[in-house]
Length: 452
Image (cartoon, rainbow, N blue to C red; front, side, top):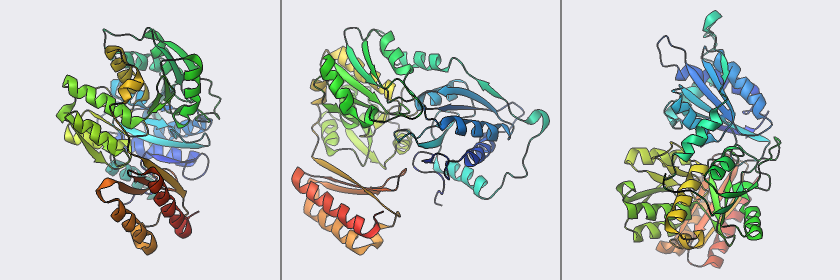
């Protein structure tokens, strides 16, 4: 059964346009509240947090109204990183958590995603259940009255709780004194928490993107634009740079030279270190099909292996839980350290890398040499529909020809974005020029047949 509202990471779209309207937010709140009620006479509670987008106020209030209308109480934490909301949900024993954020998307977009009471994102079957309640008007007759209507409370110390949690993931015998760090918070949800954590550990922190106004989230800053941070690292002769995205669940680094260190390299650094210390469960790192083949080579050389999943950190987490693994992530910077948190956490991930730097005494550029990336080209094509490419003969034939040319010395990955009307054409191989030609050729063919 295909989902109609939920994508790879919740419900997302342009704020105030279907499906990201206040009316839909209220319906999502009502349906989720109904699903998460687990019986008994006690009061049920749902945590709601958000990033810094202007439309967050509108959607937050609509969600509160919907949830309370089903007799469930709401705990409001305000702007807080997505992983912080997962943590608060679990630590406060709430029935569920809701995040209002469109992550790395521009400010005019917004989204709603849910965590269950254990802090993990919802499986597909629960999202389908919420959809069914909305699309088939199954809740129209269920309206609590009088004392059974829900209340809303504000949790004023949520940021402090999350800061303490993050600091407890860092080795107690280490600190960050002597490090000069450029930190770009993308004018997003981590703008207060991230500087506080690094400063309290003794680092000298040069902050960027810490003045949100509701409309500047991800705008020329953060993990989408590491070149801004890179310039500041070189200007201030910093030891490294750390960039978060809008909801702070992903992180991208630059080393002391201003060279980017992406999620694949972070997994390689952490994975090989955890193999040395015996901390990497089943000697396995979980990555998506988008991760570079260089990651496989680095982990195999260190005595481990890489297991791959579909794109989306939720699928990485599902595979980790199923297989009993504790490290996974995405090239984009979503990193999951399952020994510490239930979802991607940019600040927590940064702390794990900083601990390796401080323990080893090595610079980030030296640590990053553990992995060499194979040449990779990614071309995004805006499409008018997400058609089955196997049904479009010229495109299928072209893909088959490219795969035949690359054989076992490269790979082709073509997939639709789960959050935008885009088709992503990714090719890896030994010759950068040739794979660029092949990717452009496929992209032109896609534009010709289903381009927007």
